[in-house]
Amino acid sequence: MTNRISARRRSIAAVLVAAGAVGMAATACATTAESAQRPPLPALDSAQLLRDLGVLAADSMEGRRVGTPGGAKARAYLLSRLNAIGIAPLGAALEAPFSTTGRGGNTIAGVNLVGVVRGSRVPDRYVVLTAHYDHVGVRNNEIYRGADDNASGTSGVLAIAKWLKANPPQHSVVIALFDGEESGLLGARAFVEAAPVPLDRMIANVNLDMVSRNDRNELWAAGAARHPALRPLLDSTVRVAPVTLKLGHDSGGGQDDWTSQSDHGAFHAKGIPWVYFGVEDHPDYHKPSDTADKVPASFFFRSVTTVAEFVRRLDAAPPARR
Ligand SMILES: [Zn+2]
Image (cartoon, rainbow, N blue to C red; front, side, top):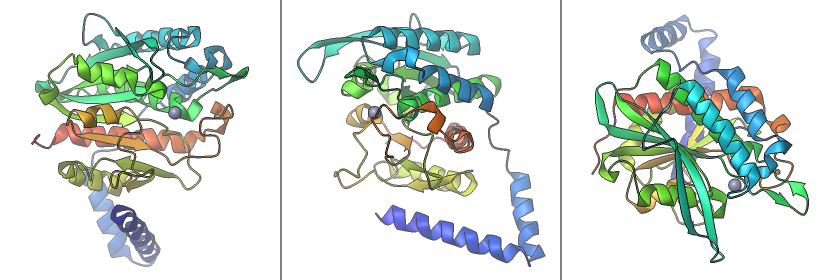
């Protein structure tokens, strides 16, 4: 709650500064000088980002439920995209199958896709970039397309992965597309239980789940309350983000605390720092009407660019693990 108030104060201050700059050349000069020192925001492939979202949220993917033909079809598409980008497997292959017990006691077989962009300077420390590609499938003959949840985050990870290949990071970045999130973070839990790299070599999990739409152009970053060492990096990202980036939803333990509500929860349970990027719920959340045509291209692109910028900053100056 404190975070939300301070974030709001910041945005009001920004509006006042912008209004004052109209008649104040000095302010304009200072702003220009500051932005001249800053590297430009990561330039992502916006057309491909939208194409990937459209493919994943198409009716032919049948809602991408774990263990279904629709899920397998989405996975085949994602494999082709990872190969096209040139993502190397982290383990024996990009496909990392797992089998686990679902909430109803049934056995569920899923497949994560796990690759890596090797770091140029410190290849044995890892940022773990994640999104779940599964959704809830077909219910009562209705397809749940899951465009925002989570074709958006999946497409976002692909876009950031492509940018990282062209702009090699200092530390390695694991690219993980998880299966079975909607059935209880199954893919993420399987990943941390049999991690392909030591847990203590993970700098942080950066998880994208629902990043494509918000009426107020707001994106949330949760995690700083749990791991305060990440806070300065998030604060600095807030100042350059091309969306209204708000910090919070990471304390208190109630419904508004998102700590365990997506795959980062599995990392949290293992004591690994994490940052979750996502929007607040919208009327199409977990409904068949969560469709690609409802995604505003501009916000979606700026939202994923914000995450890429945070990843860039995290790689440049990762906080030490406690
Ligand atoms: Zn969901």
